[in-house]
Length: 465
Image 1 (tube, rainbow, N blue to C red):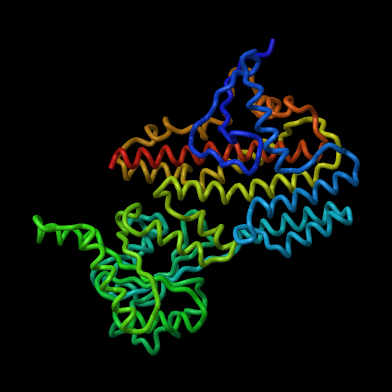
Image 2: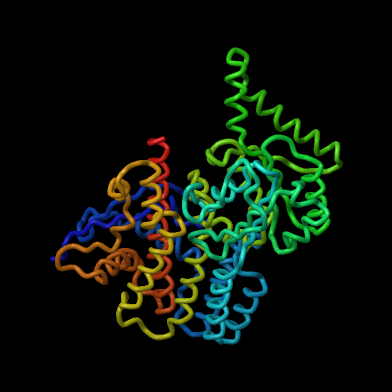
């Protein structure tokens, strides 16, 4: 008799149609494998949803499989728009050409190289502003680093940045945030500034001030615009401004009115100098408040699809929407990895789960935890901030236990049970699609669980604060 086992599946779709609205959140259904009460209808819905993504899979003939593979590549661009797809249309065309010729290895090689290129793609962000404007604090906040940590950008009232300094993101080494010396200071005159900081190397600029933007800031913005690069004006320390105003005028204080006055003053200065620009009001100490989430969305809009993907991953987990963006971006990688696995599956499957599958899944799970801030180092840092033991955070997480097994059960058996629930609902598909399903279903399942864990940590942070 089959041993009863608890398996939790994310609630993916309300129906098998791809066009239906996705249901997000940490909700999961529980199934008792081997029990007559198992809801097979829900499993069929999930399989139907997956088959809708892959196209018609009714034929196992070689020519039909190549046709299905072409449909799979086209489906990728249908599900992920040209603006957000992390592989270019040129790369997609090359894959489709290989498949049309029956060159499976060539198509797989193109996808593999494209994934490697994305991981190595550099993103360079420049943060500049006057002395004491809070730019170094913003650099640290973007990197998720505390001001007192060893590799933090030094902060203080005096000019601490005397030359441009690169700060790598601790979890994403391809991302560099540059702390630039303040423009308009005695040490750095505007006429020499742009040359000294090598400003042509950056993807975009964030120009920071804590009071009013000066002519030197606006002149810098005009020079950046002339070089056809994007710039963003950021007004920091607005939490202090609001607090000071409330202290000075406790009876007549109007938060919205003060907020509007700060914004209008900056916009008037921009118009006076004939520059069309938005201003974002933020506090580096309270990222989830004020305009910081809007700023992050705006920065994303100015990047191409590949750098959009990289920037999304290193965003601070300050809202559930930010976590959802990360999860949805990573699902492109899941899709491409599954497509690559399907391309390589040219022989009948002897064993559904092999040793190499377990190793790859463990690696993927660790990567998702790292990218979504659920890894050991992130938990230690959060526990320190919240002044709670790490074990208290671990109690509310699911992802660290995905490879835990019951007595006399192997990891391979546990993973196989995950898959057999789905596959048994529709029968055995061709080897190519079995490999696709295996990678897609398990990695998406792991990704959804890690995203739910990230939201649980975010909720605890709000409750503790």
